[in-house]
Image 1 (cartoon, rainbow, N blue to C red):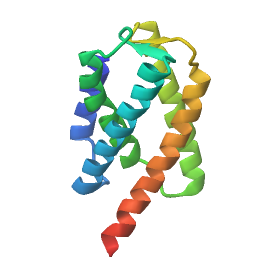
Image 2: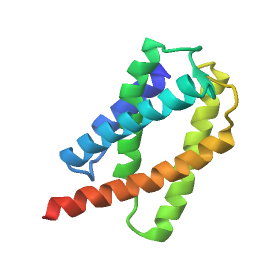
Image 3: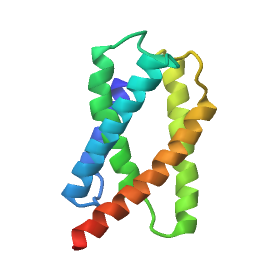
Length: 144
């Protein structure tokens, strides 16, 4: 997970930017907030999975501050405007995310209790759609 976090942040730093700094900043913060809140409830309250073991792990907090913001910003940066292309992009991003999560299970970063990859696939689809609306919201308010 550390290697993936470093790689995602390097990609973010060097990729061609299609977002403004403000859009990247807002996206980063929203992704970190949503990830932290979701994991607080699903992991620590409902005990559906563990990240690096039961309870709060400081390494997880650091990784959740750096990884989701980078990945969400990368996904949003390359997100197509066209709806048909967006559907293909949505499926590709969801597949990437599910495969990445499966790798985190194989490497013992993530341990499922009552959670499944199918639940994650649904969450990723909703999250990517919300990212699209997030950008539309930011750009609408920028014009006023």
